[in-house]
Amino acid sequence: MVAQPSPSTSRLIAPFPTNFSSSQAEKAIIALLAHHAKTVLSREETELLPREEHVYLIINTKRGTTRRKLMPVRIQLPNPPLPPPPATAVCLITKPPQREYKDLLMRPEHGIKFINRVVDTEKLGGKWKPFEARRNLLRENDLFLCDERVVPSMPRLLGKIFFDAKKQPIPVNLKRKDLKAELGRAISSTYFHPSTGTSHSIRIATPPHTSSEHTLANLLAAIPSAVGLIQDGWDNVLSVGVKTSSSVLLPIWSSKLEKRFKMTESPVQVAKVAQKPGKKTSSLGSGGATKLAKEAIIGRKR
Image (cartoon, rainbow, N blue to C red; front, top):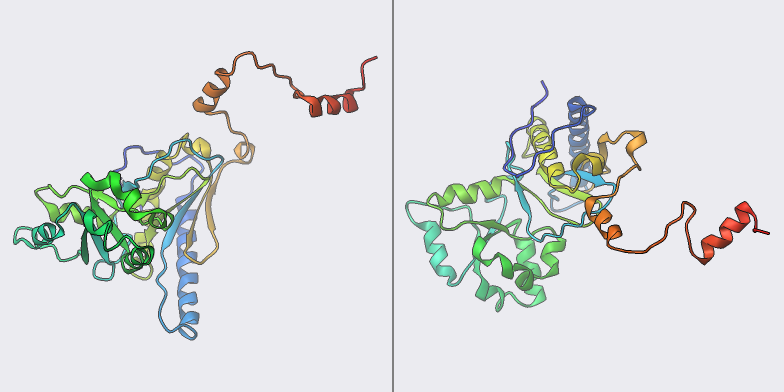
């Protein structure tokens, strides 16, 4: 039985198009995980340490977006995309002093033991400021959470390296009464990382910790939520597929042939053109080079 998509906490949901096939998605997941299992067996003979890989939903668009946001957007999944801590190392970034927040996590009413490290913004700007120190912090942790009150300072304190690795911190509310649930939801969700490019990747599973059924359920939950966060939604989507960190992309859905390269201008583009007064246009173009081309095709006027 094919799993059904589950509700997501992201604000916009883009329903599946009529030609989307859940059975095709199921076949792709089964084939991808089977390939991953074979790859792991072959690597065990040559690699000393196992390499953890993830399953990613890949959405390719016809054009990039004009929306530029730094912070990831949470997408709630029916099953955690990462193995539970301590297999997943989680770092929490807070306001100073960090000792206050370490004590907060260990209070009897919270009893939070799944945070590996607590670092405050003062230490980020001091002890962890050198590039090598920040790179070690990045390598030692799989996921970063941060107090939502310090979000604006994250790009300056962490630098480009964290954003390139798609490990920018996830904002959390440390004033929540049920703090354990707040942090737990952040760890068990996946995230859409806004990009101005034409390819978007969303982590949905970690084999073998996530079964094929759970991976499929996560995929079907993530697609409509992620597409809803893309400018122009499905009209701007060229293809959807899945892959692991090292595999080729397995296609799940692609836009119809007649629509693949047919893309109407967005309202932003239309507005930009409208703001340029007095610009003359021609069906064959304009300018010196185009004029010569016209003469070659039509013939010089006599």
